[in-house]
Image (cartoon, rainbow, N blue to C red; front, side, top):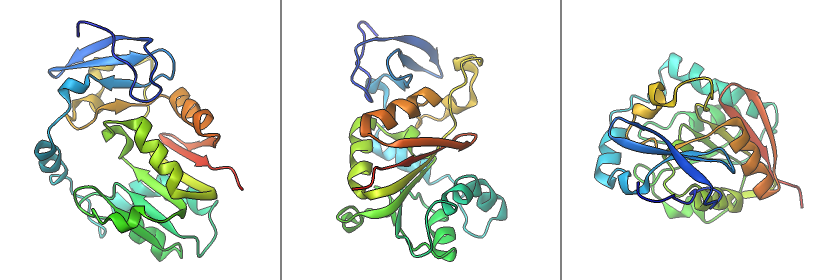
Length: 216
């Protein structure tokens, strides 16, 4: 990297090289705390899709359901039965949407590769979930703007992603090994996102953020 890159989330020029690992260059934003991969090193679409197809997201897998319950349980405490939702970035084996629907919160799926129906993006919802999705965002600023538009007033956005720990050497972190992971969030990044969209944010469990859009 010959010059500083603007942060893809907050657009700040106050960035610095963070690490080089697994053939990629990682950059740190001093403004919002996002770490990100040099955009010139983003994976191509066919590489992304091939990697996602390796995921074993089986709705019948009790272990996978338990993993998703980290987001599901606190979200169910906040959205009433009958609330309508969207699982944004549902992947090749949609499971969270099934669990929410089983719990009386009917939930649709959207994924640019595996459930690309644009009709899902043409309406609004009481809640939107993003589990292990936001780390794949090439343009997180645009993606969070879209998520805001998808939410009805008073709606909830549930995000699950492994958060940065400044006590850990970034280059040694297992989460950076995945070539489709291009954005890495810290707790303060979640707080920045909330301020930028006039949302409230709660961190009810490790690696889970729940955002509340203001009521009309």
